[in-house]
Length: 132
Image (cartoon, rainbow, N blue to C red; front, side):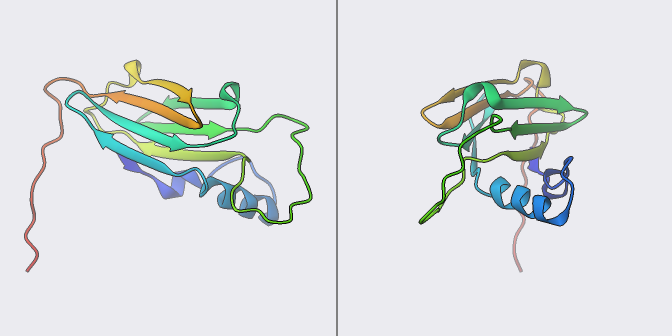
């Protein structure tokens, strides 16, 4: 499974200003991924979001995770702002070992937990490469 930066920057956003805001907020949804014996587990750190406003979809070999804030979401006049609760899109490329039909997700304590089951027998092989 691979993060696809070029796909993550795509979207229906008009104008340079909106695109800049989109990319900035996208970078604020940090993602950690770890592997278990039977799956990849993805943790999308997205505190303060509303569970119903997340969208996950698979098209071809790409998993896209989107968050769209609700209309009329309050935008205070910030004195200091270090994180955003705004929208974001993250796109990941899935390899043949992921069973896309069994991907599941839940939002718990500000973290979107996405489980990507591995098809038994299709696990990707690893190889160590020596640095010379």
